[in-house]
Image 1 (cartoon, one colour):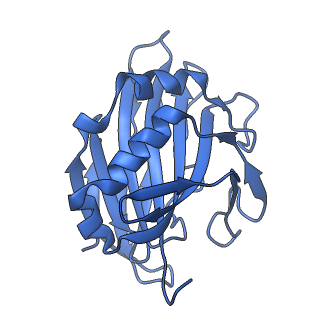
Image 2: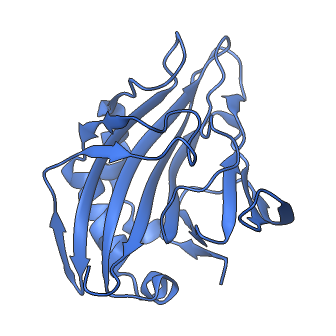
Length: 216
């Protein structure tokens, strides 16, 4: 299966929603006005057990991410509300069936993108892309005063040739999109304020899945 939509409303706590206000600025955004705030953590999942790692660095190749790839990025460590949400999400039976394994590594990105009257917010400044993992789960936690933010997923043959659009949707808070990162590319359109004079923000938790094969 290339992608699936799941309802994870019951796993989103008030503490998780509030924790987005404390995120630090993403120092790797190429803008004079910051529009992305972020925390990150990694963990090993074995069955029902999730063991969080101390390192909060993140590296993608420049081939995968022409915007911020090729450098080791370090972010604010993931807080307890986001860790708790991630642990619940990866234990979900429907998601486990999509992942196809009970033994994997995860990277968990907690991200807020903001926009104002004079600054658009770019959820995916690199454009259509892959993240470089086996699977990815994107959960929209909140969206306030947002115009735009359309999630797009399309097929790609691995050599840059575009295929069919599989998803064209403004995801609602509580929805989780899981997709096979090896078979599709994804993008989210820029956001602007729906009502002028009021800051817009879109809050998501992105979890990447790295399956463990051959005892690795």
